[in-house]
Image (tube, rainbow, N blue to C red):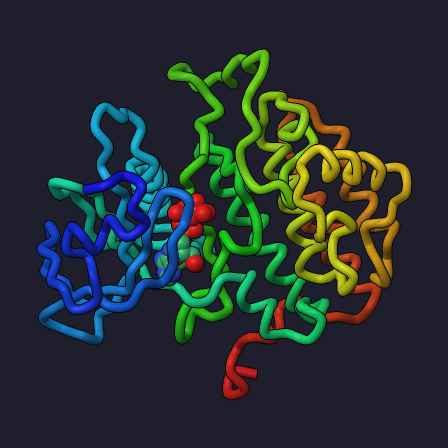
Length: 322
Ligand SMILES: Nc1ncnc2c1ncn2[C@@H]1O[C@H](COP(=O)(O)OP(=O)(O)OP(=O)(O)O)[C@@H](O)[C@H]1O
């Protein structure tokens, strides 16, 4: 098996129509849903009940690699699921159905969700959601991050492609995906880890926080900064000022300039309220806690000022639900 081969999974029998024996059931592999940095995701269905369909993420087993990204993803989903038992709050994490390892790969079978926010946005005029949907969905994205932070992890790669809506009657729920580069921010004593002197850039240039560009250790505040860029990406018709730039140093410069120019909001109304959120985020330091409530309240105020309902059906929900 060649490590360079992009279709390594076909060589080990992972392809549409193939059968996979899991720990809890046997599954028929369906179509490829997507390929990411470390994993490949397929739709799969229970062999004994084809109505039960899930998503299966697989990661190639590499000799001598200690850190499996999929194992990290599984441990986060397991931890969140255990601590959620009995609570009625909205859940933004996919359920684990089955997991295991084979000779050449690790696999995780999880709840199947719908299109990513990135793809849902593409279906819309000007590539943005209506303000009601954008603010409502944006709040859910922050709730998901708040939940992850409660479990002492930072995500480090928040972007519209890493969130998706649920299926069928869960289309109003936003799910957070892909914990491949998440990091525990506390040590074994539950204390905040001492920041490393220098860290490598990790994540996605468009949504990376300034600390990430500057190769400084990240904390919860950096996820919230990325979330803020994500929110604007969902609702600003003009897009982020650096949307057409790939070079990470130039993007860093544009992000820094935007703090002086306040040019992030295009034709949005209530610019000062968005700016107050960013000013709040920018003042946070590595050791600070985030006041998520402050941000939710600001978003609700923006909606109220424009008489916009953020709890109504979303742009992408079927007409019968509207
Ligand atoms: N539970 C799921 N249900 C449906 N689709 C999913 C699910 N999980 C992931 N996907 C889709 O599979 C694709 C790849 O997933 P994901 O981003 O998690 O992989 P990845 O290898 O971690 O990617 P990257 O590292 O590039 O961000 C994406 O298009 C995503 O929307």
